[in-house]
Length: 127
Image (tube, rainbow, N blue to C red; front, top):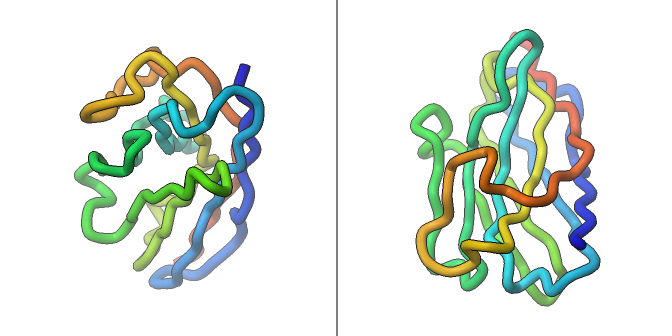
């Protein structure tokens, strides 16, 4: 079992920056690949970014590449999403997720392959 708790969401203006955190507890955090997904009202949950357990591999969605950066600190059992140059279309509930099966190598972008999810944190970007 892995428990995930996101924090750091809020209301910001376009162009601002925000850093989300996801604190993990339970099973060994360092042996999970971790990811961020987001879900806007009326839309499906979509992949945002992912990072392997060793931090050797990261992936970012095309829509956020160059603006968002995923990172993790295994000593603190925490994964981060640094979001810069935010746009109104980034407005969504952001979820972190853990993949226990594919901790090594390039992390997956497929939602169904993640085993555990947090409750989400709202990010609202005003224009």
